[in-house]
Image (cartoon, rainbow, N blue to C red; front, top):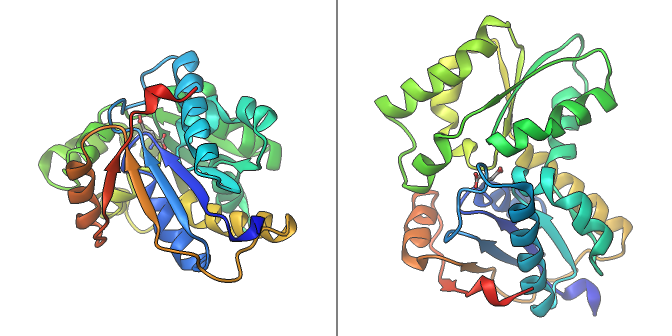
Length: 267
Ligand code: DGL
C-alpha cells in the first residue's frame, strides 16, 4: 500500500540529519530513506542550474526506491530547486523554508527577524519572501555564512574558529537588534550551543526542522499517506565517503549503516 512506502529525505550532506531527528520523533511509524550528496557538498556556492540538476538526480534516485513523499531537508535546494521539482514530480514534495518561516512568525508580535543561510539561499531571498507573505510588516535581515557548512561537515561544531566566524556573521544582526534568528541552513543546528551563547537569551532561535516534521505529518495525513506501522529501519545513502558520514551521525548520537551511491547515473 502507498502509505506503507518510505519517505525520501535529502540534503547536500549531514545537515538533513537535523531534520531527520525531528521526523523520527514526530513520525515514528515512517520509514526514512536519507540521501546526503556529500561528494558535491556544499551546494551554497553553486549556481541555481547545478542545484536544480543535483536535486533532480536525487528525486530520480528516490523514485527508484519507491518513496511516497520527498522532503528537501536542505534550504538551498528548497529555495532554488523545489518550486520546479514540485511541478515535475509524480509524488508530493515539500521543503523546509515555509515551515521555518511560519514557525518564526506564529504567535509573536512586532518582529525583527534575522536569517542565516548559504549564499544561494540568502541571494534567493526565499525566507524574506516567505516571511513577508505571512506578515508584510516584518523586518528581515538575511546573512550568508559560507564558511560554516565545511566546518560542520568536518565535525568541527564548537571552539574558537566556530565562535569567531559566528561573531562575524551574527554581529550585523545583533546590531539590528533582532529578536528572532532563523537557522536557514540545516547544517547550523549542529552549532546551536555556540549560536545561542553569542546571541544571548533575548533572541529566540528557530530551527525549521521541528516545524518541517509537523508540516510533513499534516501533509501526509491530508494525503492519506500516513504509515500505520513501520516497515523497516531507516536507511542512509551518500554520494561521497560513507564512513565520514557515519562518524558525523555518530556525533549526533546515531549509529547508522551508510551506503554509497553513484548519484551521477540518475537523471
Ligand atoms: N544544508 C543545506 C542547507 O540547508 C546546504 C548547505 C550547503 O551544501 O551549502 O542549505
